[in-house]
Length: 184
Image (cartoon, rainbow, N blue to C red; front, side, top):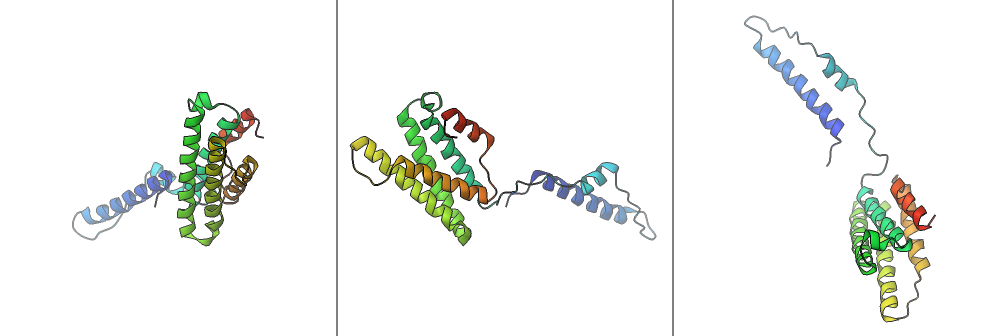
């Protein structure tokens, strides 16, 4: 489990304050122990400071949605014909897309293991990978397939809707890449 840096800092400060109180009470010379510890103003500020808001998104869907954002960025590069700048060649971009879709599928399956509310994203990511593989075979070998590029894009949009529903909207850089590619 990952702890937010601000929360970790507050825990360390609290631990330090408690330790200093205990040591102060124990080290007071003979007689009765009278704790008279005071908190420094900076320690009080850290204790009362509200932690930074953590992203509103579902943490169990985070890695899945981040994987989707990479797929979306690659899709924009392919559609916008920015492949040479970003990947060097169309074949390299296609390989990157395939790898990213495999990661997306793995993340979807991992999320599905956490709960049934993630079952849809696992199915959509598997579908996206299968459609993409069949489209590549069709393009390279002239084989027939019932899937179209429209089916692939529709599946990706459904994944995006799922991420949005889990509190992970498309980042600004992806929106800009889409606009540059004419995918608005």
